[in-house]
Image (cartoon, rainbow over all chains, first blue to last red):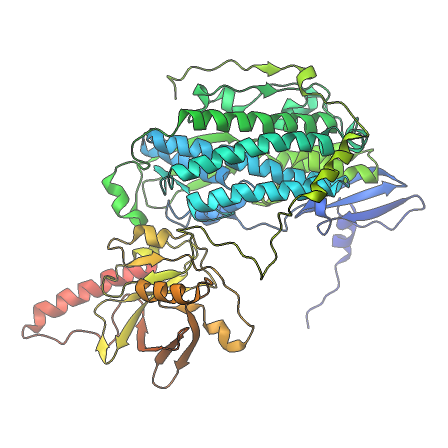
Length: 394
Length: 228
């Protein structure tokens, strides 16, 4: 039998660590928040409480660590698509797209117009279904379950459209280096997409009534979890959270890709930086996304191939790009999502690095914002920051 | 990307985004009580999978050339090449065996198949009754697409086309009990790209050259196996 007793020095060392469970004081106690709590999804927060106020919060991620970046080094280029999309579950098209864009740049492929149009549409559809997923989570956290149920039903429409286009409902595995895997199933699909967009435009008013104009939502979120511009920029906050503190940064505008330079849309910016501002920015972005989808449908898919014509693609498992490296990033609902791919000329990538927005939102920013908050505000702050735990762990 | 002009960011005014808080508005959601529900009553109602939904595999055994492209591209390493004997005849090339305990249904294997032998159908139900023998069900060499379509037309519930798979350890004989009652028997002789002893061609008249060539082939197949 091994000696199971912990040495004295180690015990003393552990007392200095953040995670060490101190004996409960008269006034403070420790609360384990998550991962069974719905707001935290897949990670937990250890809260040191003084009555109802939080003195200190320690984020405890790592339940979902799967080592994607290392795994990607051992697999052929096209195979990695089926792996990397698991980084962000609600909008799995984003990791697909950043990786494909980076590989496209390394090889020097010019992706056909039709493929670019499809990729733009798929990204916007993914954004829309991710917003619906966010309403489901946020509505549940503040007790407005009805809005969440509606959102789940409307998300189903997009899932059906994805199913017909890509053959999968949640994990689409659709965008590959060089284009997309399948063509649009026909004009019927485009008509269905337009119907869905029109339908959701009407339903946004219902969401306003029940969720965004709601007395409860505004009372619960106003003045909760305030961050200022300087703090946000120091902690690398991106996406809607950054736009809620008054910085108009959007990758679609600042570093445009695909069809975005030709599209007309607005970037909503608010100054307050509290939870309500973050909610309202998201509300307005939903409207903009529907408007973008409408413009794309008015434009119509350009004719031409949906995949680059290259003889190297005939032997996919042994596809070798030239030496080089590339970085590509897109705007997701969570923030700025990027991938850095290094090729050493073999059929497997030398290095794949993913820059996710959730590392800053879910760990450093969250720990700061939770200081001094009430216990009931924890789910609100968590959901308005909208982090993606699989992306923290990766 | 350099030639693209950088568009100016147009910022939305605050008055456009901000909404008005209200007590009465949330109650307007009650109107949905009188509308048809979105939920589906399973098993009385069901959704059909979309055409070309990525489901179970099919394999045209005559077209398959045993190139192992499917095994190399598989992200989950679910595909293993098997040597098969049907009615005393050994198939000339190995065929892929798909393990649905590992398969992620990405269908990259279908995309890379150079002859179009490997395909897929819309059947997607992976549930079993929980018996121990059912655990062996989802590890199979896919059968002919025509047969699967026939079964789909007959039953139409998009389940796995095989009801039960048995494996006789002594004779190494595998039997597929298809859903319409027919049986399909074959022997699995060996695994991997390298042909097993029974499937190897007999040495010809000129042993020196032939053996050198065959050894080369074996080596190449070995290296491929390691890489794959």
